Image 1 (cartoon, rainbow, N blue to C red):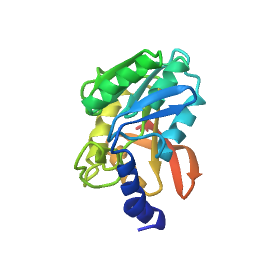
Image 2: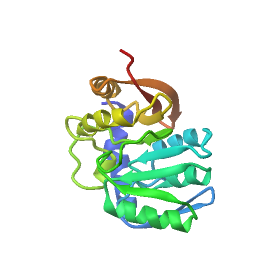
Image 3: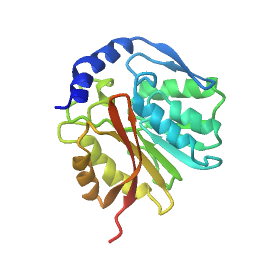
Image 4: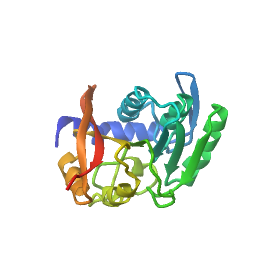
Length: 221
């Protein structure tokens, strides 16, 4: 186990869990969010900021964007303010209810869907799909741990990739962020089993952790 992974598992995660055990308010570039207790908090995770910055560099005007597993909703609301037509999904009813409130308070129109991955999302082709997945192979015990753990056999990805295939058009840009601390090659193999390929889009080292954004494409056979 790397030093970064040990730090994350033994020190950082417990500290973050304590800090987000109560509701809070977070502000970012004029966006004000109410963050319920136990919800993935953008202040404490590098991945949210990195994926957000990457998406903000795109031309979002009138583009359809799906944030799969929206959590705190920062990416969805930021994209909507830049002119995107946004759909936000999450497995948590609490998150979806809160996202509707945050969208309203920030004067944004967002379609919010309570869904386990794509289960309740009608098949359609989005211009952009943003995914900030859990990637540590362990069984989550509660909603908070679902932000970190994808299941002992990577169940999250084994469900994600077969569903994703139906939502991809040749022009869809699907961006997924992963850390060097996860089993990237294992996740890549699971994607390939569904006829998908992870291609390097960008990478950035933030503090002690190297982060990667991959674009996901159908494999041409």
